[in-house]
Structures are given as structure tokens and as C-alpha cells.
Amino acid sequence: MTAAEPEEAAEAGEPPRAGPVANLVAALLVIAVGVAGLVGSWTLGAGTPAAPGPGTWPLLISLAITGLGIALAVLARRTTDAEAFTGESAKVLVGLLSMAGFVALVGTIGFEIPSVLLALVWLRFLGGETWRLSVVAALGIVIAFYAIFVGALGVPIPHLF
Image 1 (tube, helix red, strand yellow):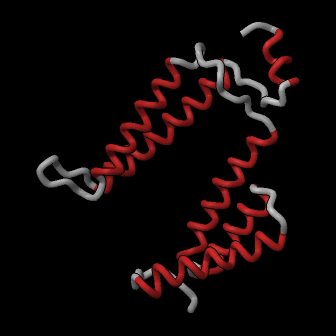
Image 2 (cartoon, rainbow, N blue to C red):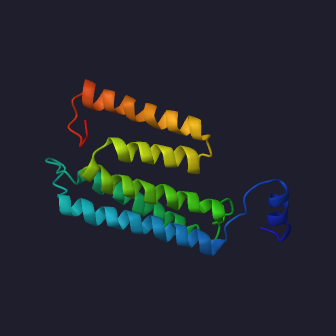
């Protein structure tokens, strides 16, 4: 990448490109997620190929994530199409934190309220939709999921009603 390329990208309205350090940090985060998944799936019990346990699929997915993270780390210096971390990158963190909040609340207060809040946050604050659309869509999404999973399929999820 030449010195003029970041300026040309900015003029074209493209996000700034990440450098090798940012690429390596992203790769290490992917590896950390993969390793955490490996540890968690191993505690579930992987079983054997003939008799897979509950941790079999999480173990295989975690192996793939870890392998892809290692590949990202190896290619960190040569990757030139990755975006740099900017203020917009905070939206990803907000998305992850809101999902963690959803998981923490759903077992305590049920499915409905956390689901509406999650959809509302994602639509309004992360997606930039209007308040009207965000509220109507969030309620519609939760009603549809409730009707499908609780009403039609009888899935035992924690719910208020």
C-alpha cells in the first residue's frame, strides 16, 4: 500500500484501512473466541465419532474458528482490504454487549421484554431506523417469534405470558 492509497480511499468515501497490527489484534481475538469455544465444548463432552456427545458440533465449529484465526494471524501483514477500527466499530461492541444483556435477562424476566429491547436497540441505535419503525418492528418481531415458537411449536422458553 502506498502513502497515497489511504487518502484516495478517504476521498472515495471508503472507510480507512487497517494496518498489520490491527489485523493481528483481530486475528488474536478470533483465536481467543475459538479457544474459549474449544474449552467450553470439551467440558460438555465431545464423545467419539461413533457416539458424538453434546460438545461435538461446538468443538468442530470452535476448531474451525481457531484455524481461521490462525490463518488471519499468518496473513496479517499481507492483508490490505481490512477496515481500521473507528468510531463505527463501536457498534459491533454495542451489538455484542446488547446480546449478552439479552442472554442474561431472558432467563430471569422472560423472553418478551429482553427481545423487544434487543430489537429496538439494534433497529434504532445500530441501524439508524426511525423510532416509529423501530418500535413497530420490534413488537412485530417478538409477537411473530412468540407465535411461532411458543404458540405453534410449543418450545419451552422462559416467557411472561
